[in-house]
Length: 323
Image (cartoon, rainbow, N blue to C red; front, side, top):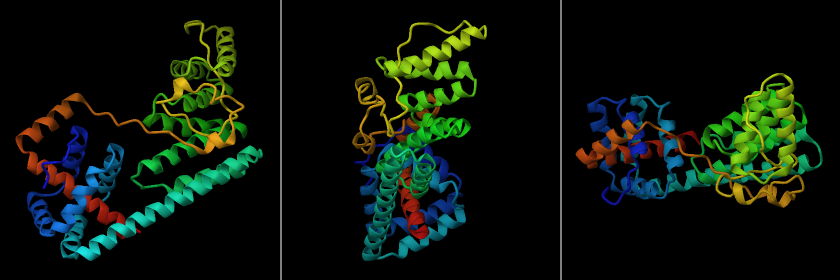
């Protein structure tokens, strides 16, 4: 059942970490319960093949808040489920996810319209509601909307002079997408307004590495560097050219940032705002950990794969029970 599944070392580590919180007896009990239902295992295996790495990571994260006792109870419920109930469960979860994503998309659109009217406080509330709707949804589409809302929030915060909030929002984006040009630029602006000039120049310099032809950002960078020099700090390098993008509300993906400086200008249309292509960058784990996971797969591939499927099956059931 598991031989056709592609295993990522990081994801194997996550599955092992979550399932290792259970005793050998509890794990064996859940394994027996779940694998007694072939329809459930087939659903989990097929679903896993279509999941992106970040979705699998989110599913594993969900298990962190589930006790071994709760996992065992969920395993018992899953083992008793009929094929019809399993299908209904999956359909219900999918419908709820679609509903929440559509609602978030609508809120984002409303926020964009309010932003274009200069109603930044009202717009920020729409983006915050959209982000709340997307909490816990392990889908790439949800991640894309979430990124768009975060970047749009940063724009609102800059307009409202809420620089600390802008920095916090930008830092969250950059944890997952360290080279997101808009997050770097907008956080750099916030740092500059707060007088944290070295931090501002650092962010703007990194933004230049992604989008080197942006002339409007260059003016902001140049001003920050001049102020930094007047204060007696001279160790930052010269000669950067970067473009400003504050007036635009939307996202900039790492994949197309270098080729889209014109689209990132102040004059960018609202239509481009709604087409969000942002993606979160992959998590990072030590090479030693990955090597151990690879070796573990070679030593006992069936057990590792079983843990992955069991973990994801339980995660699915948790999501269903919380709907």
